Image 1 (tube, rainbow, N blue to C red):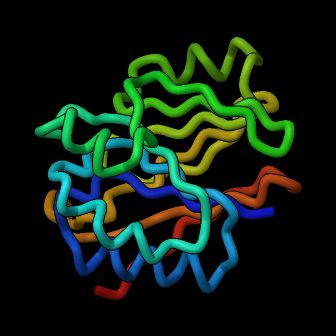
Image 2 (cartoon, helix red, strand yellow; image 1 turned 90 degrees about the horizontal axis):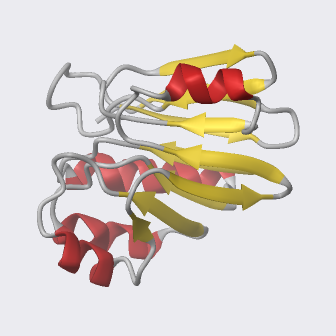
Length: 161
């Protein structure tokens, strides 16, 4: 079973739509947004998603009340813990506690954003994934990630734009 990961979309509607097309094509069952949607209107394309959706607030998210309302309560404060298909997942925006959380052994998957740099790494039995920046504003490279929950392997996908 696959989950899709996206972060730092920063209102880039074209890249959000492209990401959703990929997630739908790949048949992901859950999409997790690791923060910085930015504006409530940027959630509109997620209505085309053929999967469950959950996210967290990032440091650039503006109107949190409207973001939460527009997401139908599916965007949360960080850290946000999820259990999906028996896997313990924690979602953060900033990376400050990622290594400590991985060392704790309390989570199967740690997802974070903020750095705009894609990362897939295993520490002990914990998979760490930063899907990079879908919005491409900071480094000019748009990426998302897909994790196979059964094998606990992640891959970064470059968006064409």
